[in-house]
Length: 231
Image (cartoon, rainbow, N blue to C red; front, side, top):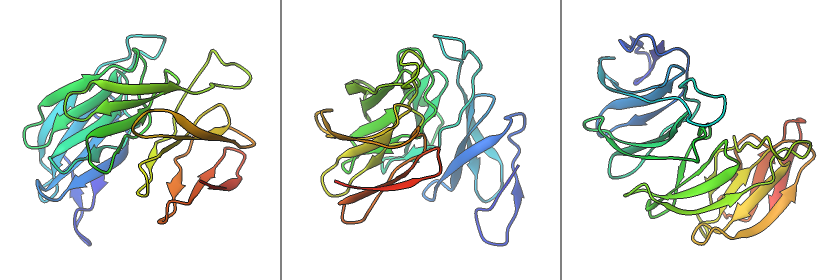
């Protein structure tokens, strides 16, 4: 694959055999491009040379039939140089400088397909899992702070999913996330208490966007309708 750390410059990475690469994040401090591949590898690649600095190999889920390691999640990078990324066996925290795994959060043995989001103080990581829960995880220790279960598929509540990546409000730290229960949920970031749930006309698997003033949340559903919801 190819990436563009600088306009007009095209590098080919030496990270071969990763399969498709869905999303990536850039650390300007370490000049790293961080991304996950469909064979379960999390890579840190030098943005100037394309040379792989480190690779973390994740594993398959320990529960259910999704035993193949793969990564759909986009990393989020904290100010203290930790990359958080979802994988088939949980949420990973990886040190950028060395590629050392700081911790792995187990989302009830199920994959984490969505991309994580950080609180304003960067002490909490929010992420949705295939276990049907939205999780708040301590960014330092990897310990769960709270979890909240969504409704799952309306036609089959026993087949849950939270593919939507969370968005965090700058105004009050509220966490917004979509679910296969056809709803957009607003959750208090500190307590995990649900503030409200907005019902759309279909599954909500995309990620919400919050207006700058924090008063409106925008979310599309799989029916092709974009909803603007007042908080």
